[in-house]
Image (cartoon, rainbow, N blue to C red; front, side, top):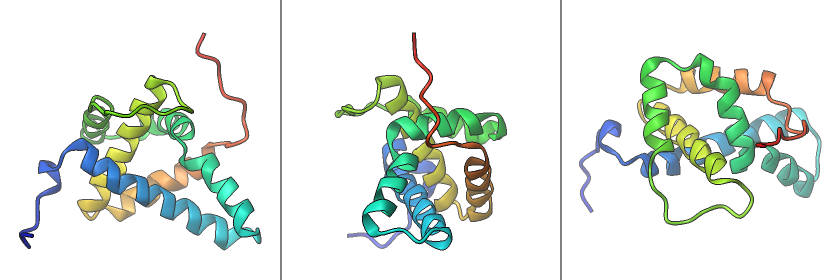
Amino acid sequence: MSEEKIDPRELSPLALAFVGDSVLELLVRQRLVEHHRLSPGRLNAEKVKYVSARAQFREEQLLEPLFTEEEYAIFKRGRNATKASVSKHASPEEYRASTGFECLLGWLYLQGEMDRVRQLFEALWERFDPDAPRASNG
């Protein structure tokens, strides 16, 4: 394999989402273990409330007003990327938006913008209620 580093702007949206998924999951896991004394099973159950496609769709909607123009463009690239698989637990709209959100987080991370990732994560943690009932789409 080549050791030449690829510019994050040249990566596919799905490659960026692949990284962004892990970025969000690590931040959520860190926050949970730093602030809660829960069994591993409970930790995992709480984590899923933040990193599922359905949750990420709601998180992205909360954070979208904070996105810069460039961040919104990256989000849209990820949202509009085609995927072979579809989630059993989320609508196509939720799944696409969660992919866009992961794409943005992956892009920010690979650009070395961890301060911005943390800023968005703090806003998410303040505003997102994982136990709030999901708004109906109809």
